[in-house]
Image (cartoon, one colour):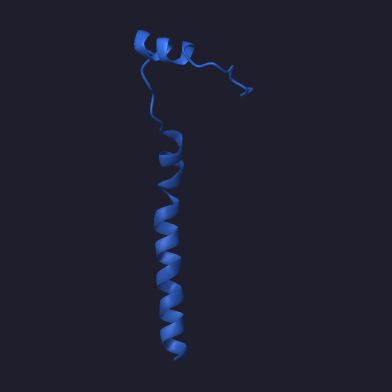
Length: 55
């Protein structure tokens, strides 16, 4: 049983080491949305209530 636990821990460490190298690259990439179209602007202007979000 102890040998199996050591093997499992070793494999988990290898997986963590391999995957941690790619994480910073993935976090830095995002999706750039296109500017709002006139239809989007008209839709937002038709809402009765003002936005309450603060940036």
